[in-house]
Structures are given as structure tokens and as C-alpha cells.
Image 1 (cartoon, rainbow, N blue to C red):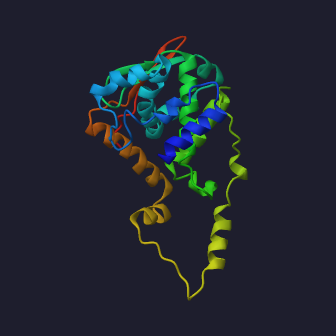
Image 2 (image 1 turned 30 degrees about the horizontal axis):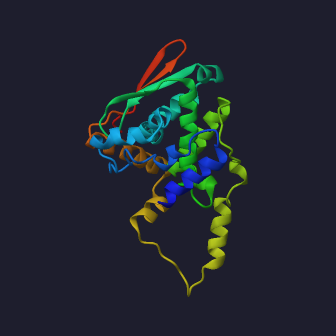
Image 3 (image 1 turned 180 degrees about the horizontal axis):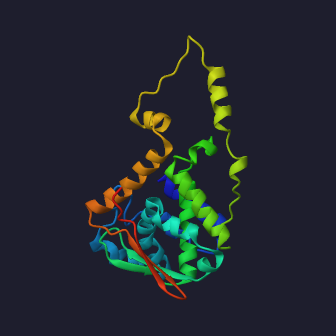
Length: 244
């Protein structure tokens, strides 16, 4: 619940021109581990409680988040020029809960939605040592990529002050502090699987694990990670159902 409150309140204050209810309800039609707070049969009830625009963003949210975390979607946007980004007129994709084809069918909706996603990623960022974490933390890596895309496209609409080189201590500083605090009488060992992966598994492998997890959960429920970017000139179809 804290996560929902953070997203709602940040949106209400720093993205005031758009409805904050989207981020309050962003996970109601599915979370990353295939838990669905609202079942398919209750979608009409949810739809009646929201405006058409709010519903469009709420039902899109779990799908676009998976595309972001999977990687191909951000890679395609990151490789695009300003003119190519400016030509985007929407996106076609599949709803997580039932694999129904849905769309964000205007440039306005597309860029607004990516600003919602940027706010959402804020709540998953590490507390410190961003320079080191950027290479292996999937949420931070996606946040940085999405921020840069929005900045390049001149579509960063949410108020956000972000300067990676000013945030956190460097890994060398962190190591120095750790060494200063350690002594022969007080040595801390972390034996959790997560800590072992974070500390010893190479960064590319860690990122690959995270991206494969997204594909795994979608495959379990028959959800397609394919998407089509609509542009003023053509449509570009891509698939994130890649087997690593």
C-alpha cells in the first residue's frame, strides 16, 4: 500500500496535469508475478469507476511495464532520433490479464503513459551507490534509459530533478567506508541468495536474469510481449518474446 500511496502522491504533486488515480490503481490488472487483484469479470465494474482516459492508462500499465523491463522496447526508443521519436503516434500491445489486443492510440497518450511509468520506477531505485547499481539493477537501468528517452524526445512532463553523477557515493567510497567500519571483532556476513547474486554475479548476467523473469511470467499466462509502434510514416512491429 505504501508503494501505491507514493505513486499517487508524487503524481498528484509533480504531474498535476494528469490524473493521479492512474498510479493509485496501476497494478489492479496485474503485477509482475502474475497476481491479479481485479479479475477479468470485474473489469466492467472498474471501467465504470474511471474515465475512459484513466482506464486506458490503467489497463495498459502492467503491459508497458513488462515491455520496459524486458528491454527491447527501450532499446528501440533509445536508438531512435529526435525526429523518429516525434513521429510516434501510439503503440499496440497485449493486455497482461487476458492477452487482449489494446492500444495507446495517440502520441499524447503514449508520452503521458511513459511519464507515469517513470514515476512508478522511482519507488524501486536503490538508496545509494547508483553508479555501481546502474549496471546491474534492472529498475535503475530502466529508469535511466526511460528518463534519457523522455529527455531526448522533449517529453519529460513530470517534475523530476535527476543527475546521476551527483547521486550516491561511488563504489570506491562505499568500499572505503565498509573497510573503515569493519574490524576483526565485528565482521558481517550476508548469506542470502539475493546478496550473493548482487555481490558476485557479473552485471550482464544479473540483468539477463531479470529480463528472462519477465518473459517467464508472461509465458506462464499466455501473454504476448509483442508490440507495434505506430508512427506518421509506418508501423514498426517488435517482439520481446526472445528466448535468451
